[in-house]
Length: 340
Image 1 (tube, rainbow, N blue to C red):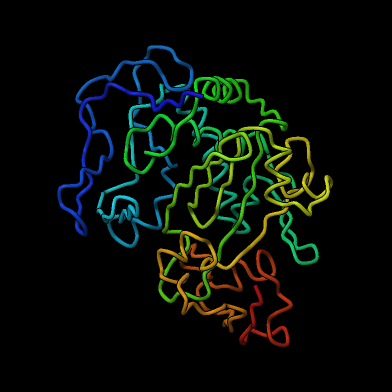
Image 2: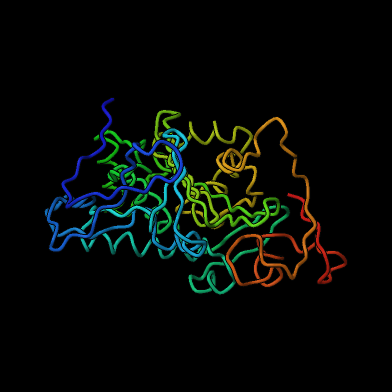
């Protein structure tokens, strides 16, 4: 199978500033803003039109990194760290297609932020059932559109962050057709999401880290993106094969709840401790021989919420919603023991 990383004619490309590692390593960044129109084939509809300077990863996902200063890029395989002003932007899409994906990305932002008002704004309800979080009323097509759009833009983007993202011509055609028709074949595409909270690494915000994972497995391609405190795991290929590999013990009924089903009524979203994410553990040095197992943490319900949304307490954000209220000591506003 021939893989393609589409070459695109753009004004000029920026370089991310290397501040640690070999200074002669070139790390390609965003396209510079052009003084006039950039007219080329749109990466989605394929029509020759003026292109927009598009964020590859949705703009909203970078807000937490920007609050901490200029985003830092850690390229493990290149052996360098960089500074940049923003997440990568490229001339990829025409105005119509940018808006088509943009609506889905804004809906995705509301789900990701996950506060009561955020979910109420998009008419999504959240409740805990046993030991899992269940969302109801989710517009699955919008989340599939956002995830498929991110996969497409990643495959088209020339910047270093997406250098491993490649799709075959057949996969590009399939992905474009699904997005344009807003029709996502459950046998060929599936979506799984994990919400992360940080109770173990002091001073680190789980929403400020971006990691783009891209792997070929199970006869397809897996795009696993950590952004905004969630992992958005999107698979293009034979989904039954992938799902049975990822969760071999899930029944068919459970699979329709854990993997977002366009025709389903409920969606299970697991919540996990941030430090067990393999990229985070490696980045923070938590995967070595001296790593400490994280069994539980004592939290004050008046502390800032460990989901990292900012400027809101645990009791006013995730407590009794994403995280169980039963773990609060005597139901009071004292300490709670969080058993992940």
